Image (cartoon, rainbow, N blue to C red):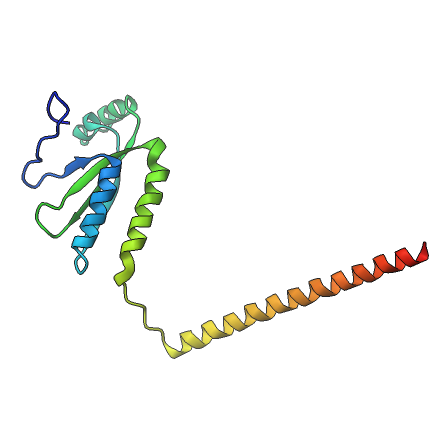
Length: 162
């Protein structure tokens, strides 16, 4: 938040809008839907704090500044349209949950991908592999069925002896 009352001020021209995690995911979905034929760029980057990023050129001072803060992830997204930059900061403990949500959004939005054209040799090779896996699965089923039959017969023989 920019102001003392907690309200957010508008970002400067060209600056990315820093959002909360849930708001970022909603805006990312909107960004994808607004760019059905365009491109959306997403970056995930380690962020060890503002002080550490300011001391990039001085590694020893940067390490000292980074040691004081828990590392976070900076996630940015943008499209080629003006004013489309968004970003958010993710705590290390929330990263796995966020990555799953981000992956789900990306998977949902990738419906416009074209299927790759395969050559005749590749298709034949895939068919052959499928046949081999089916044959292996069938032989495993036959073996397990035969073992069950043998076990059932041996149990029935034991029951007759008594």
